[in-house]
Length: 217
Image 1 (spheres, rainbow, N blue to C red):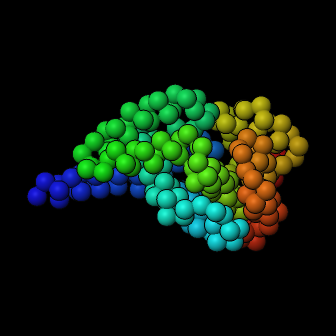
Image 2: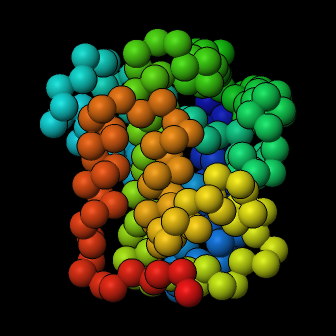
Image 3: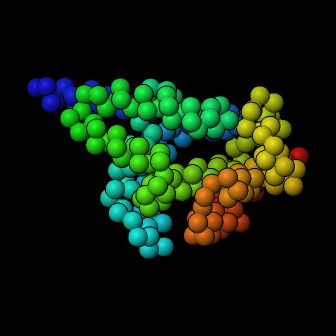
């Protein structure tokens, strides 16, 4: 019975991610009946990883990558979804690792799962580097999907810290729409290789849902 108890405790705790809405979409005021949860992001990034591995023939252990991405947001069951505009990478990792200890404390394989999370955070192995690129690009692609649905008004961003970031403002002042800015921001900030840049640029220039995108007024 003790094993069953541990399984259910872990499941119930991590099930919370189904209801944790991604903070970035809240900050930008995405106007939609359903906005992506952290759990949905985890699903999306795993599917993106499979497609990138399949089509670009990455020399990575895809099973390890899938596990890494399955657990890379577990800390958010405790600390919530914090963006780069709210907290530094170093501080987020510090409080995140403390949270991970709590989440995994009752699992017999908790230490092994924690090792996978730390490997992802350190981004030194080829699997961790690949998983990190997938994590960031998936967010860019979700932005594009929302923009194609015309879910964001750039004139309603008074309280959005992300909107006031100097790089964001520079890109928007170049008359880029929301997703064009977001995709370019990703290519500037994150260590995408040529394949990830190719997918990013292709997504930027193709309307995924054939809906007119919202340009900044």
